[in-house]
Structures are given as structure tokens and as C-alpha cells.
Image (spheres, rainbow, N blue to C red):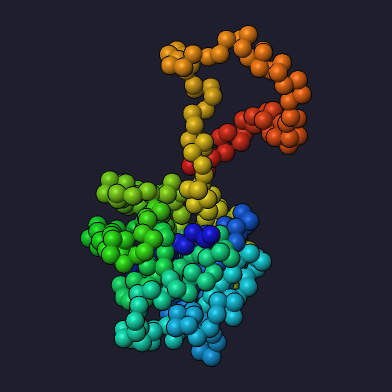
Length: 323
Ligand SMILES: Nc1ncnc2c1ncn2[C@@H]1O[C@H](COP(=O)(O)OP(=O)(O)O)[C@@H](O)[C@H]1O
Ligand SMILES: [Mg+2]
């Protein structure tokens, strides 16, 4: 069952599309099945993945109105497990066409429900506006990732965004809408303004802020003109590495609670808690064992797993990308 994630900020140019295209690529590299839905009439994600919008081609517009089934809309990318549903200029007209149809806020959700089981992640590249399209995107999503540009920050804009999310979460969304986190984009380590904005966000943003900051990187801005994600353009660039880390952070959000256990070397043994139920005495246990001389053999793989030596690298793995 896919996690459906809308990448949204009502401001344009904050790296929504860049985040969608590249985060999806790195999740695909991690073996996840990913669908990116280009839900912006400007169709930048489509062109960034080598499928520039064409007026006579099927697009998410047709999916939105039930005119085409998902499998007829899906385009391949360089990864066999990374698919795109492109946008088109038709989508701009959808705004007006949606107004008078029943369940107009649920059209994208109804479409996505048909493919939820086919993917691990479905990303929605949202338009930079607050419109019926935006509402459709947020209602269809389980989660939202908010890119925040590191050299522009408006508390007013962010409050407005959180109000929209709250409104959708409480009144329209069936499954609820969770903020997965804000991600700082176009971050410049040498620029005091970038640090100031990061601090402002840390103080004012009431949800998770991803530890990975996406640096300003020419590789990220060049890659779309070649119609491919940065992983194919310049995988060693700082921008590429940052999206790789962000993908790991997104995956780690699903990690079971065991990843938050204290490392063994820091654990201080406590005095044993008083027993409320007395343990059976040794003689009873021996008698019990003797009563079953041939216990069922343990499954070989289970034995191997239980006796597996703990790999110290594995233990710190979950923390590694937070550094
Ligand atoms: N980390 C980055 N470093 C340099 N340029 C970036 C970065 N992220 C995005 N850009 C560029 O900034 C512009 C806006 O990004 P885009 O992802 O299209 O924003 P949005 O989808 O929010 O409008 C694009 O030209 C993109 O290539
Ligand atoms: Mg965009």
C-alpha cells in the first residue's frame, strides 16, 4: 500500500518539482516502486523526466475525469520501478471544469485509489497555488512534504499553509493528512541568511523538519534540461547526495521502534524490578523439560537469525544520515 505524499508549498520556485523528481529517483534506487504524478499544468516534472507535455497526449487530466485508466497514462523512466504520469495544459482548464461536478474535491483521490496497491510511494507534484486542484492533491495525499526555500521565508505564508493543511485534515480528507516534514532547499552554508531562516523555521514550525538540507547545486538546476534526474546527470554532486540522504530519511520514517533503542554501550543496567509472579523453581523447569525429551527442532533460519552476531555498523546505520 503506497504512501501518498503531496509535495506542496503555495509559493512557486521553492523546489517542489526538483524534490519530487529526485527524491522519487533515489527511492527507486532503494528498490521502492514509485509513481510521480505531475499535477501542475506547467508540467515541469514531466519535461524534467524527458516527457514534455504534448497537447494531444493523455495526461493526468484524463485520469482526473475518469477518461483514462492509470495503466494507459503511465510513462517509463530510466528506472523500471519509477513511473511518471505526465501533466498537460489541459489541467489548467480542469479548474473550471471541476467546479460543477459532484465530489469535485475527491477526483484525484478516486484515481489514485486505483493504483495504491501497485506502488510503495506515490508523489504528487503540486501546483503553486491554492485552488481546487490543490485541494484535490491534498485530499488524495496521506502526507505532505513542504520544501522551504532557504533565502526566502515568510511566516505568514507558512501559517497560511498550515491552516490549509488543518482545514483539509479536519474537514475533507477521509484518511487524515499528516505533515511528514519541511525540507530546507537551496541552502547555502556560507550564507548567514540561510542559517537565519533555518533557525526561524526551527523555532516556529510545529512539525518535523528534515535533518537533510538540500544545498544550492548547479547539477540540480541543470539536470531538467537534459530530461533526467540528477542521479544520471551528476550523481556525485552535493545536490544529488542530499536527495539521496533525504530519501533515506523518508524511508526511516517507516522504521520500527527498535531503531530508537539506546546503543548497548550507553546502557546502564538497573537493579532488577521486583517480581510480582514468582519464577518456577529450577526443579520444576527440569521436570517440565524431562517430560518432553524430544522438543520440536527450531527452524534453521530462525536459529541462524537469533544467533546472528550484532553488526555494529548496522546499529548506527539509522543515525548515519542525520549527521
Ligand atoms: N538546490 C537547488 N540548487 C539550485 N537550483 C535549484 C535547486 N532546487 C531547485 N532549483 C532550481 O530552482 C528553480 C525552481 O525549482 P522548482 O523545483 O521548479 O520549484 P517549484 O516546483 O517549487 O516551482 C528551477 O529552475 C530549479 O532547477
Ligand atoms: Mg513545480
